[in-house]
Length: 431
Ligand SMILES: *Cc1c(COP(=O)(O)O)cnc(C)c1O
Image (cartoon, rainbow, N blue to C red; front, side):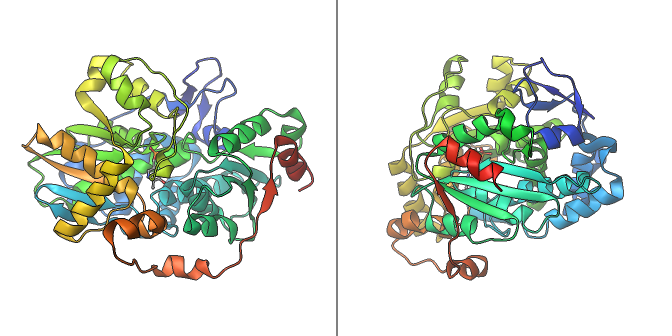
């Protein structure tokens, strides 16, 4: 399968090159040159497929010849080493829990899949690849855990000082081995700007093979298609119309859901739920895309003012605004509404949502008000324990650390500290 750049100035590349480059030389995102619905049988007889088999059927066409089938199956098996339970919350409303992986965030699947692809592609290459990534919280942890101990890959993670949760910081700074963290005196946008500058810095790219691990990378973006099929498989009643609500920041996850629908998964509508960062809800009003500076919220992994993957959604629908509107709704919710939803659901059904999942829940409720003939699934993208500072006061109850987290809380933080780009450059060049 070939991938083209959405800026249309760079040549088409294979899956392998798209993964290694991350972004096209003309700064465009890579997009598959065709999307073929998969064999009808797969979704109509979904019960007879394991998660691994489903994943293989869904992603094979995009990987093409670049990874042999047997090797791809092995990568998928290693990636999907945990559960994705669908939990009933209210009548016709379910939570798809995507937080049972090593870092308890949905980004684990993309992180693990990408790391294994990169390691496969790099196996004959003696030059080390450096993954340079900026994180507002969860990306860094998932990338750190996914790449830990992967041969031929070294990881450098930048995160904004004081702006990630305690659990997230531990996940970033206590891995050791091939993972290094840099605490940045600044915001997430500052981290992102430094990473971008490094990718364009000749002194650096002459010496170091840099790659990104953000959701713009096709190997992080595409495996997220699997979730939507895993959810569908667990539904008791598949005759009722199905809608998904995805708490969205960079819009990679929801765009992957729409890809799954393009492959033939029977989904009737998608809801992109956002916090106060509402560039896409605004777009859905008038078809005009206007990026905004990001604002800080309690669902901080979604504090994005210029969601990079939204352009891929527009591409899927040929940038036809009416067609987009037919398939996608988007709503924005304040922190107050988010907390109120967390409290209400906890008191009515005993279910604890994290702030991101709660935004997804709100979007689903909003849509279902006028579509009562549907059943809805919201994606619970992080374990509530990762946002203890927010969740505990709202529900008025102590949350126990699960094993994965307990293990890291006693470890000692190890991170460099930088305040400007020159310091990042020196750090990278002197190893
Ligand atoms: C990254 C993240 C999101 C947003 O996902 P996108 O694919 O960027 O839209 C939502 N919730 C959590 C917990 C995240 O870490």
